[in-house]
Image (cartoon, rainbow, N blue to C red):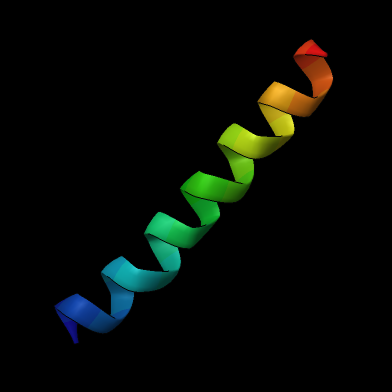
Length: 25
């Protein structure tokens, strides 16, 4: 269960960082 939970968490973090980069530009 831990691994399954970590996968979506990392995906959300990647989307968050991508949004931050998009806002920066």
